[in-house]
Length: 333
Picture 1 (cartoon, one colour):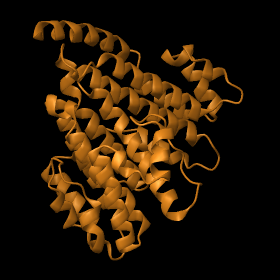
Picture 2 (cartoon, helix red, strand yellow):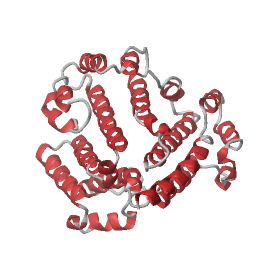
Picture 3 (cartoon, helix red, strand yellow):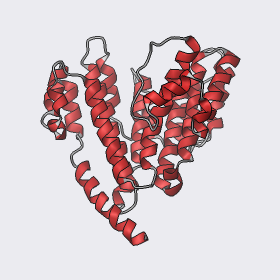
């Protein structure tokens, strides 16, 4: 049975290697940043692996539709070829929690406006909306049900809307770490742990200058990363200093450099966090069987879509284009 699985994933790995060669290189992204308009970016995409997409010729062009379509195809691809490893669950779970955050805020504030729900989760928008409309939270999977309960209790206990997101994130990461894919693959588990570190780094940086942040420190940082969450909690009074210490201790040279940048420091640190996560996937490049090469490709392709979306957004007049440049023009240690 093991030999059959190895043969299957050997075939999948070959397909993945071919697809990775079609990912946009750094040169394409730098060219996109140099151009003035979204139309120029679309023209570059028409000369790449995206050329077969009819959505590129839509009038008017919609970046949101492009990203949604390609991401949907990517996740379907991972679902189709990952067998029973649970890898598809890893990619879709974020969108379940995204939808729950939105629906709970709408429930609390009786407001239908706000962020857009995503159809990329494991639970359909229709089903999730009905669950929140009827408060049928018991029908949710265990971690999601506990997340809703904790967020409701946390919000009404402190009357702080910002507490909703970190409470959901705590259960999202616990859900990811408990997933079948995480239990079966050390690489996937390590990637999730580094992703937790990245989330904690960004949470600590965003605290900078906020009063009474220490009152909420227990809610803002997630357990389970490579770096002890307690180290982040203890640094809320001097977050930049603590981040510098963490970066030095854990050899996060890119984070150290990003903290010293003259502008857009938050985006520079986010760039390095994403680079840190991508580096955790490099071991998959030397694997010829198993789910890891497929998982690594999925992460890289999804990251590419985030970059494309950011660049297209940067071409709108109201967007600060320097943010996109900060996010994309280094990204390495």
